[in-house]
Image (cartoon, rainbow over all chains, first blue to last red; front, side, top):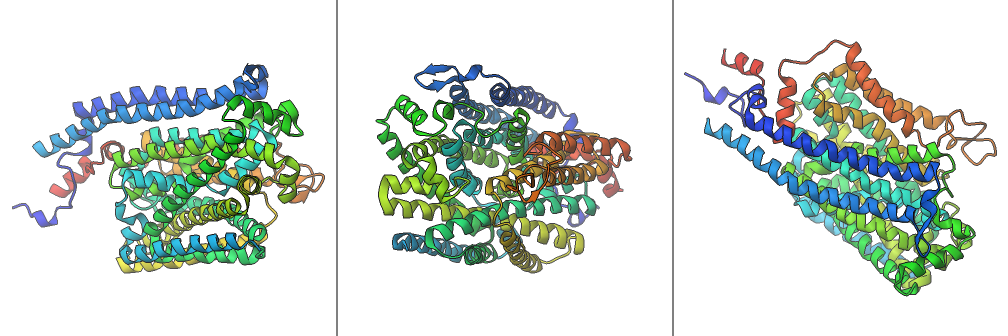
Amino acid sequence: MHDVTHVKQTDSTRSAEAIVESQTFHKLMREKNRFIVPSIIFSLLFYFTLPISTSYFSFLNIPVAGDITWAWVLAFAQFFMTWTFCVMYSRRARRFDELVTAIKQEEDDR
Amino acid sequence: MNWTAILLFLAIVGLTLVITFFAARKTKTASDFYTADGGLTGFQNGLAIAGDYMSAASFLGIAGMIALAGFDGFFYSIGFLVAYLVVLYLVAEPLRNLGKYTMADMIAARFNKPRVRGVAAMNAIVISIFYMIAQLVGAGALIELLLGIPYTTSVVVVGILMTVYVVFGGMTATSWVQITKAVLLMIGTAIISFLVFARFDFSVFTMFSEVSKATPLGDSFLDPGNKFKLPLDTISLNLALVLGTAGLPHILIRFFTVKDAPTARQSVVYATWVIGAFYILTIFLGFGAAAFVGSDAIIAANPAGNMAAPLLAQVLGGDLLFAFVAAIAFATILAVVAGLVLSAASAFAHDFYGHIVRKGEATEKEQVTAARIASIAVALISMGLAFFAQSMNVAFLVSLAFAVAASANLPVILFTIYWRRFNTGGAVFGMIVGLFSSLFLVAISPNVWAPDGSAIFIGEALFPLTNPGIVSIPLGFLAAIVGTYVTKSDEVAGNFERILVKANTGIDAETEAAMTKKSS
C-alpha cells in the first residue's frame, strides 16, 4: 500500500516535464512570448529614443507650441507609453490567467 | 524654531508608532515578520510600493534638480517610472511564484547551493545599505535645516524610529507606514502643484514661457544638456534607472506581501499610476521653485537643490504649508528606510542565518528573533556609515544603488527565470562581477575624484562617467553568460522545467527524476 502520510505535499500530480509538454502550457508560453517580447523591446527602444536624441542631436529643441519643445512632448509621451503598456498588459494577462487556471484544472482532473 | 513644524513632525512620529503598535500584535511568525503573511491587497501593496519607491531623492532631489537644471532633472522622473514596465513584464509575477521571503529565495529555488544564496544575500545587503545611507544623509540634513537639531542627533533619531518599526512591527508596520506616507506625499505634492498652476493662470503655456525667463539659464532652461554634458553619461544614467528598479531588493520583497502572482501584477499597475502621477507633478514642483523661489535662494539653502520643494511651500503657503511639506519629507524618509532595514535584515536572518548557518532547521521563534537582531545590526551599521557620508551627494548614492542593482541582480534574476542553460557558476560569477565592477567604476569615477577638490579625493578620474551603468550592466550580463559556459552544467534533469512551470503558473511540480525516486 502507498503510504500517503510520507508523500511530500505538492500541488501537482504530474511531473514538471509533463506539464511543460502539455498543449495548454505550450499555448500559455507561446501567447506570453508573443506579447511580452515585442512589447518590452518596443518600450525600451521608445524610452532610449529620448536620451539618445537629446544627447547627440538638437532637433528636439524645436518648439511645438509656445515654449514647449518636442523634447517635452516626447518626455510626456513616455508617461503615456508606460500607462498604456501597463493597461495593455493587465488586459492581456487575464487571458494568461485563464490558461493557468486551465492547466491547474488539468491537474485536478487527473 | 518653527513650532508648527515640530508639532507636525511629532504627529507623524506618533501616527507611525500607533501603526507599529497594532502591527506588533499581529507579528508572530516568520511569515508575518517578512511578508505580513502575504495578506495585503493589490491596491494596498501598490500604494506601499509607491511609498517605498518615492524616496527623499525623488521628492526633494528631483524637485531641486528640475529647478536648477531644467529638463535634465526630469530624466530621473521618466527613468524611475518606465522602469516599472521591466518589473511588470519580466519580474513581478515569476518572482512571486518562485520566492518566499527574499530575492535570494527566488534564485535558490533554481540553484539550491549555499554559495548562490550567500552571494545573492550579500548583494541585497550591499545595495540596501547604500540606498539607506543616502536616505539617512538626506534625513539628517533635512532635520538639521528645519528644526535646528544637529546632523548626528537627527540620524540617531531616524535610526531609532526605523529600528522600532521593523523590530516590533515587521513587514506589517513597514507596509502601513509606507501606505500612509504615499497618501500624505500625494496630497502634499498635489496641493503645491495646484498652487503653482494657479500662479501660472492654469496655463501650461504661461508656465513654460514664465519659467524660461525666470532662471539664470534663460531659454536653455527648457532644453536638455544643462546638467549632463557627456552624451554617454546621460545614456548610462538612463540605462541604470530603467533597469535598476527590477533589481532593487527592497522593491522586490514587496511582491511577497500579496497572496499570488495576479495580485502582484495588480499591485505594480496601481503603483505605476500613483508613481507616474507623482513624477508628472515633479515638473510643477521644479518649475514653481525655479520661478517663485529662484536659483539663488535654492542654492543658498542647499547647493544640491534639496530644499527647493520645502522653500516653494513656504513661498506659496507660508509657515504652515512649509511645516506640512517638511513633515511629509520626514515621513517619506522614515517609510523608505524602514523598507530598507527590512530587506537587509531579511537577507541576513533568512538567507545567512536561516539557510546557510542553520541549514533551514531554525524554528519560527528563532527565525523571528534572528530577524529582529539583524534589523538592529543593520540599523547600527547604516547609522555608523551615515556619519561618515555626511558630505556626500544624496542623488549620487541613490543612482549608484540603481546601477549596482541593475548590474549585479538583474542579469541573474532574468537568466534564472528565462534561460535553460544557465547554471550555478554563471549565477555566482554574474553577481560578483556585476557588484564589484559597478563599485570599482564608481571608485575611479568623477564622483570620487576631481582635480579641483569638489569630490572626495583630489586627482583625475580614471573613468570619465559619473554613472557606471553603461559598462557594468553589460559586464554583469556577460559575466553570467561566460560563467555559465566555462563551468560544468549542473542542471538536475528537469529542474528548469520545474522552474518554468512554477514561474509561469505557481504550480509546484516535481521533476520526473524526483517522482521516480520517490515511488521506487
